[in-house]
Length: 86
Image (cartoon, rainbow, N blue to C red; front, side, top):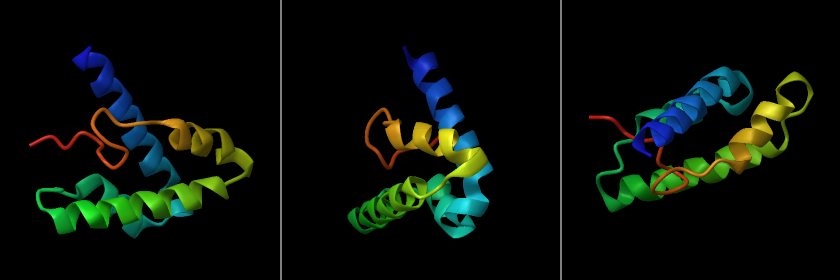
């Protein structure tokens, strides 16, 4: 089961990276690099996830299907968690 979750996380990370120009480099970097070790960091990540969802909802054209896929994706522990590997 863990391998499946890792594959989903890797796919979500790849989609975020590919869509970074449409989403915003700063949002994507924050989503991918956030440590989420403290409550303030978790709150910041929730804000970035909200921004991400808003941006994804308005992507159309060639990247529409990828954006919709990310909108439907749920992380293994939370929507803001893209499997931080330490």
